[in-house]
Length: 213
Image (spheres, rainbow, N blue to C red):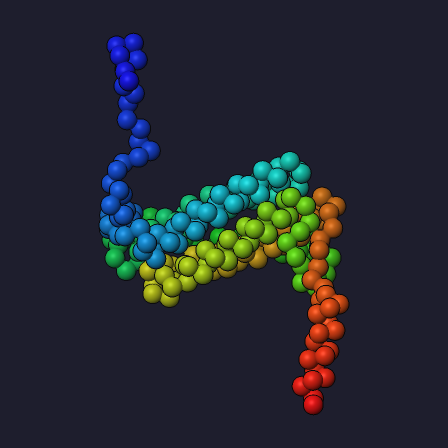
């Protein structure tokens, strides 16, 4: 209810109503169903960025020095999204050039991975997501990143999205793995390692013996 003293507020730009019928626009102007592979990839990349925001909150609290890298990655994911939202097989030259994703971004990730990994103890067993709040949420980022890569691969294979995007997401999950280990070490938390349960070992021994009969 409004009156002269409380005029109706100006319409927000947050909502447009143009997607109410289940379709939305890509950067090149194409209208597609929201369950299109492109929007599936865009949504998962967006989910990854949100997960990074949570991880970064705990990294800042711990002061482990990963904050700037995580923010930079979130910015790069905006560029990844722009590339995905501009199909390489149906967009004009100017938009393709504007949204091209530089493979140098992959090299930067590799240098970060090398730097962190060189500070870590050798990996001898499978690690379970553990090692304190920062590490656990970085592991979650790794898992979401793997999913983002999986849903993007078909677009890369169809040459709808640049190969550099697929490479970046692949390397990014490696970064999150190393970053999680680094956070656990820096914050002096113990990581949990995979260990076959005793009951499982005994069961496997029985199965092997039975298979010989």
